[in-house]
Amino acid sequence: MTRDPSDQRRAGEVAIALPEAPDAGLYFIGRIRTPWATRDDCPKNARGSDALCTIELDPRYERGLADLATCSHVIVLYWMDEAPRDLVVQAPRHGTPRGVFALRSPARPNPIALSVAALVGIEGTRIAVRGLDCKDGTPLLDVKPYFASVDSVPDARVGWSEGEGRRAPEGGSAP
Ligand SMILES: C[S@@+](CC[C@H](N)C(=O)[O-])C[C@H]1O[C@@H](n2cnc3c(N)ncnc32)[C@H](O)[C@@H]1O
Image 1 (cartoon, helix red, strand yellow):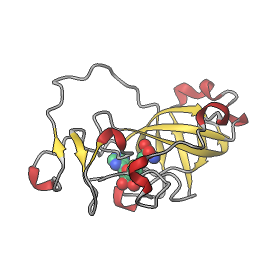
Image 2 (tube, protein in one colour):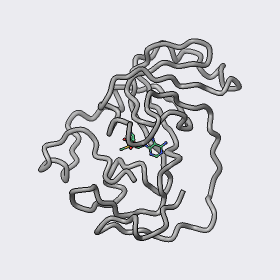
Image 3 (cartoon, protein in one colour):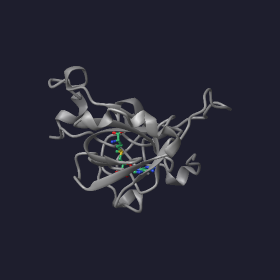
């Protein structure tokens, strides 16, 4: 989805022309069921709620779930299907415009979101998790084990957010 009219753009935001055609195709491997019907209902980030969510995997991938139940946490990758893709500089409602690659905004050239979620249980092709922030029905791209030994960087910094007294990811504008 491309947000076109400049009347929807906030001060300081920059949109670009996207390439004519994508370079690769993706398979949506399932859908994510959450309590949130709209984007506005969603928590701002994955730590904003511990609501139970269900990943509904397409049954064709069921054998890929082998051994996943041994994991306490998973990385969930999903496709923010309602996000514009052309905004390279984005502005929160009240704040400084920032480059898309310094933001966790869903609006990006490839609107791929990620969250680290706690794995609650697996029944058939339904994976119950806590720690997601997408609207109900959001397409699923992938599920991977979270390895604290390699994925955790406890002293990582996001310099621009430090003055704002924030540790959790900033979404930027989430139009
Ligand atoms: C800031 S993003 C963070 C996503 C992910 N945790 C990440 O860091 O990549 C979360 C926001 O995306 C928006 N959102 C949720 N589901 C969406 C969807 N299907 N399409 C577009 N935007 C969505 C909501 O406004 C939600 O608060």
